[in-house]
Length: 226
Ligand code: NI
Ligand code: MN
Image (cartoon, rainbow, N blue to C red; front, side):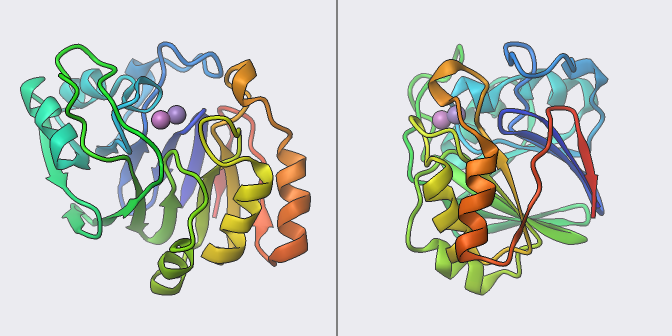
């Protein structure tokens, strides 16, 4: 498997299939990659905030690939004439050779795009099984049932927000690693804007105190082979 951090919460996960998560390119200050440079088999969108919904519609329509999201947000993608898979928290969707299970996320959700009309469902995270198992937490604070998620899935890589302010910070994210018990953790959702300025080495040091998980700090655009 190959994991590329595009920047912010956007990742390209290349396992059995190529899965693009939270495809935020055009207004993302941490990447110069443009949506037309991306080739993938499906898109997963954790919630309707513009820094996660991003350029999902344009990419999905150009490549004629499905967008996986919670049912209410999925109706927006239907309206935008995308192929959609609308499911819900606790449920799984099998697309091609990949299984995606939706998890809860403690956050808010709104209408950041034209035509979204305020109904974007609940924010979510994803367990993506595509050769290896990747947990993308979406935007969330730490919550105790991360231990349940960790006990039900052998997580190879956890992608966790550490920027604070809108989500958990580096110290809380280390608690998330302790609960999830992944083999590896990669920080995300930091340093995109001043409000979420964070030092990923604080996360790395805090994780070392409570977990054997390896922390890999990526630069935007950097890939990791597993
Ligand atoms: Ni958000
Ligand atoms: Mn966000």
